Image (tube, rainbow, N blue to C red; front, side):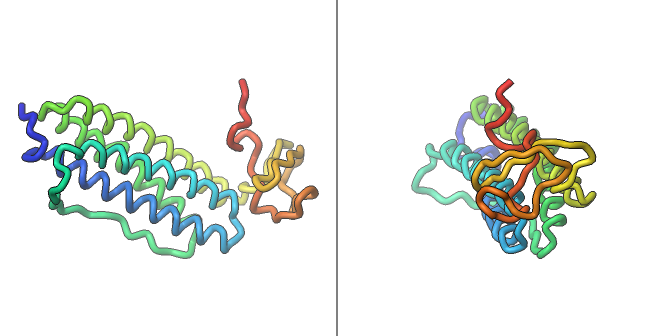
Length: 200
């Protein structure tokens, strides 16, 4: 076992992960901008929320490299190019990329870090892998709702929240305009999926 980060595979894996998370943040920010233009404001919020978490992942990986401050780490890597104006496809791409990190990339990097004598870094890879699974699940759930025409319509009466003003109503579907603030349907989310509302 080597505990020399400078000459380890773990250092390269950290830099690849930092680059990947940084790029994911930008891809999700770009996707959020497209969602805003297409009036899918709830999906814009999902992409921005996830982008902020990817920034935190990048910072965690970056801070693990503090020991080699002042040097450059050269890596080869492949990163996704997901350029499309199709919001559904962006959600599907995001789901795929998050699951790839969860299923193969970060578990492998965690094993390498453990074998090379970096248990704390291994833990970070394993913990962030689980978060990426949650990201993938969330993107997949919203993609399924959008694809089935159920993003703003439900088969049963349910609660809907306007993400702009917080107005909540019970209905089979979100209103075309919020009766309180006048913002369009794109701001509505099923209450069960709204942030900070499940107090059980």
